[in-house]
Image (cartoon, rainbow, N blue to C red; front, side):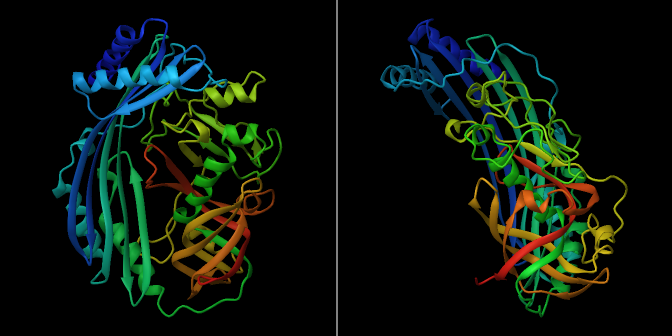
Length: 461
């Protein structure tokens, strides 16, 4: 962390020397080290690693703002970054939304960091792949095991200077039999938490139980969404719903103070949860802290960066959710969690039903067990009506028992409506952190038993 903070201070010094002390400037330094072991046809076919440091500079002068970035951290590379950004600010259009620099403030905590995960070898990742393949019992398998670390720092000319680190390990893989796929996913701060044999057995059980699926007519069905599927609700609520910019522009469904969700729903953005690979500050240098967005069904907050807080007015302040380089998009919950009901998971690790969802299936008279959804797209941002497809295993539930595999279905569903008052029949006892392809964004979800989900057709239309 010291190296990244020293680099940030070097850039600030260059801004003062080359651009003058009248300029306001902020610098982010992010070092991402990621290693990936990928497998297909039950064989490892790729080991790749990337270790890149990116320096981002934002300069403000006389009502104008410009930004630049580089991965060239030599003295020449940094000097070039500063020179071109200082020149660009003089040619930039006026920036009436400039919120000013983040003031000096201490961090509220640190995200999870594990030395062993940061230093994990290809052999350690390969051992988990081998365990997954062996547990699949001869089925065709494919997927990846990933380890990554982040060391970041931020400094600005107002005196804010912070640094932090975090690690992540993730496994995402399928087993396949006769065209039927079963999936298992898990993420954590620690590679040691990933058990390839448990994940492989779960994926294989789903693949074996999913062959020869039947076709069901469109309509509304009760559903049990396993954590893989429930995480998609969280990602879209974070991006399109609780985004402070969308809320200020009245493009979001969120009505602060209204009971918009079932009382069993509490949504929290928490970068410091024990299993969270959370960043301790955002791209503007604002320290992060635990933020409750929905409290027992009531919408109580949205996420803000400094710009969206200024836009919202009324004394709103940044909640520490600025995205790097994404000023027009607004602020997003980086570590959204739907709090579980508590208690213990009851399923067998090699069963068709994810243990996190096993206790919910018995409460369904007739409905569907949904393992996963994908290719989800927004149809109406204001009501957050989404369309998408099921995948990796769908089964009919009858009288509390999983019975028949079902062909994949297309759905058209308002996510807030699916979680609305009276619509959530049960929340699972434990949450599962899901792997993300969004950088420093993760979702943690329990399984959900929902009263209604609108399926509009088969996978082909």
